[in-house]
Length: 215
Image (cartoon, rainbow, N blue to C red; front, side, top):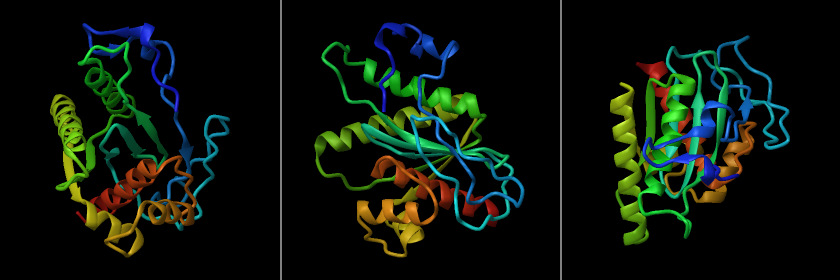
């Protein structure tokens, strides 16, 4: 996925100036697997993403806009609007030599703020990871979680953490499912994630929708 343009970056404001004039983040709109009958939206024909409409039987809709996140340097995200439209993708925050130490986190904050404001998000669901592969991964996860908590509070969005095994079991039926199994399940459901992070975000979104329906 294309990185935000560095020359449009305003380090004082912590936002991307380009957001005011163009959509610098890829958007893939697909038919909502969890929408009411008649609420599905046709797939985006943009060449940047080739996601097909869902083949999953529609479920009753929910009256909230949900943002689901798989937190990490390659951040998976998925949004479901009240009208049933779904967008999803992966945004990379791999540091560049030209960045100052804080730019990685300012860019992450700008990206998440844009999603929340653009789609009027009211619920943010995210994978609650308790164990990490290494110290760097743990530090990065903590930083991204801090940013999520901050922007959620700023925009009065409700946070919904969910355990890793819970998501894997909910999505695939196996609490120890690997990355390939998560992507395969998304494909079975008529979705086309570009990465395993994207697939995880879609799984979290599906779980969050199910929680709202049960509430």
